[in-house]
Image (tube, rainbow, N blue to C red; front, side, top):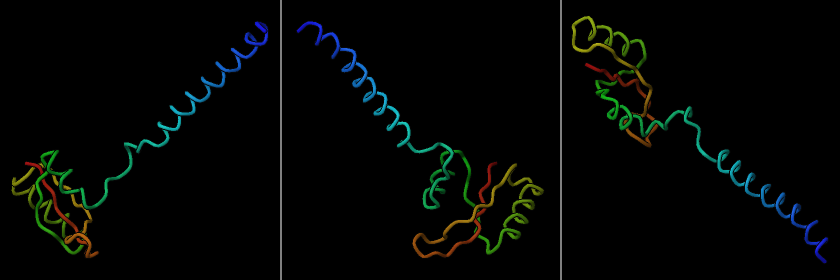
Length: 102
């Protein structure tokens, strides 16, 4: 009887280790990636957390960048970003939003 228990013990240990490893690996796979882009609706709150201030809205990227460069030239801010976002969430009215950092 003792020899049978000694043979089962390694098998049980291997099975338990396998389940623990599979659980840890499953958790790592299920975790969201840090590199995934944030949803468009959370962009303004993300900008606020990194001292980016929202500026005006523009119909196209070129107009947004032109305004951003003009703001740098006039010393209103030191850097800017133009992001395509929904102006009114849920209405699919995408425009370019200027963000700047003084």
